[in-house]
Length: 179
Ligand SMILES: [Fe+2]
Image (cartoon, rainbow, N blue to C red; front, side, top):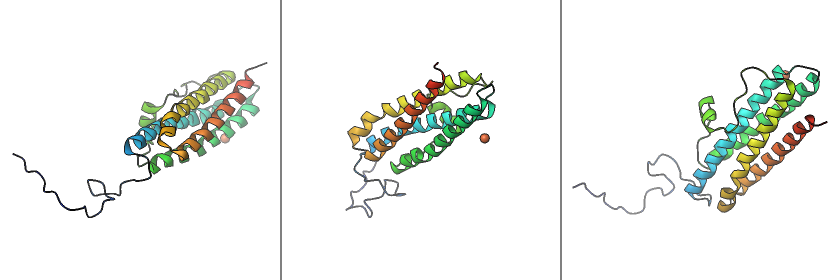
C-alpha cells in the first residue's frame, strides 16, 4: 500500500507552487479564469501577428494605380499591428501563462488565414485586409464575457483598444472599395 505523505505544518513558503519552483499568482483572478483568458489572448496574438505579416507582405507587393496610397496605408497599418503584439503577449505573461511566438503555434491558433502565396490585385488585397480586421475583432470580442466575469479590467481595456483599432481600420479599408 502506498504511503500517505505525512501531513506537515504550514509549508515553508505558501507562495510557491507544488514544484516549489516559482511563486504562485494571487491577483484576485482564479487560475481557471486566468488560463481561459490567456488562451483567448493567445488566439488574439496569433490573429494580430498573422494580420501584421499579411499587411507587411501587401506593403511590399502591391501594384497598380493606387500604389502610393496603399503602400503608405499598409505601412501605417502593419506598424500599428506590430506594436500591438507586445502588450497582448505581455498581458498573457502577467496572467501567468506563456505567450506563443512561433509560426507553428500561430498557424494552429489563428482564425485569420495566411497570406496568399501569389500577391493578389490591389483591391483584392484590400478585401483580404477588411476580412482580417473583422476576424481579429471577432476574436477579441469573443473574449469579453470571460474577462468581464473574472473582473479582469486590464484585459478588458486592452481588448477595447484593439477592437477600436480593428473596427476603424476595417471601415477605412472598406471605404476604398466603395464608389
Ligand atoms: Fe517599406
